[in-house]
Image 1: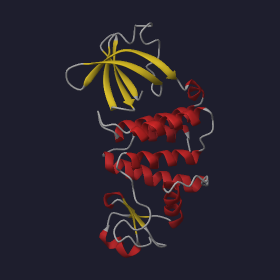
Image 2: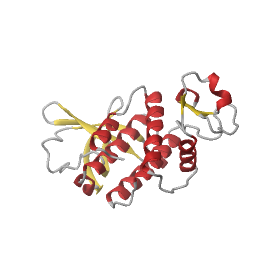
Image 3: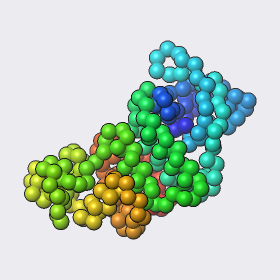
Image 4: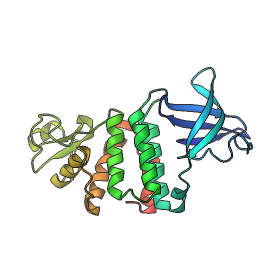
Length: 235
């Protein structure tokens, strides 16, 4: 479950991320009062089986749920809450209603599980971001150059509008590009290729800055959970 908002005095509008049908909006009548039908299960991040009834338009009626995994241990620490909320918001904003993204669904469930078990280090969040962008068709390019496909060299620039990193020779074509350190480009390229070696804190911070810039450009806004992570001090 990606989130929910209250509606009226007793109801809720719930946003689900399903494996087979993508993102769905559901009307949960009496969800704020019914202890039998929902039993407090409508919490963001809960992995559940939902009983849905199709209605007119794009909204379904949520008749009941069965919890598969609540990931309740994530709620013991603000830093874990911040990472989980960020991943949920990222999935919600990168996807569209009724468009399945099965690899992304599986990656989200796996990441939340590792996070709850305290087995997901800070670098794994960067890896999840890169995977989420790839699975939804927004994958930035870090190597080779996004314009000429040559090596990015020692003076690369990053430009979300042109898809990622460009070499110094192509930099006049991206006047809004920003200078980026080669080691940051290399680190993100290796993560994107599947390498899982933990990165030093400074490299993680610079890498996250680039991904935040890229995501904000394509979504038209900065994700709300980014500010929460910064307030909490989550790496």
